[in-house]
Image: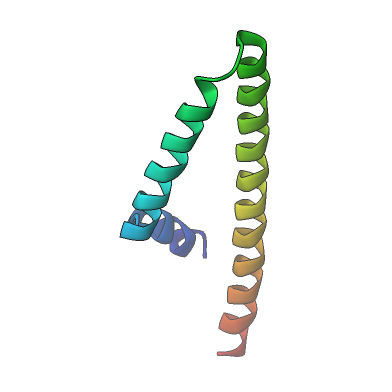
Amino acid sequence: MKKLIQIVRDNCEFTKEEIEQEKLVTGLSNAFVETLTEDQVAKFVDFLVARDKLEDIKINNHIVETHKICKEVFKLR
């Protein structure tokens, strides 16, 4: 099962939509940061780091749940 998860991770490709959204978000963030003071930039970076950590937690939780479901499905075989 761990091999299956690693194969998925290794073969994940960015979609065109994901790349376009990443460019949009980066452009908006850069434009926003240009209007901030140094203290505000530091707080914004802290926010981004915390948000990214939250997203990592969510993704890992989905992986764990998917792993559990796959184990159950393979048991049924």
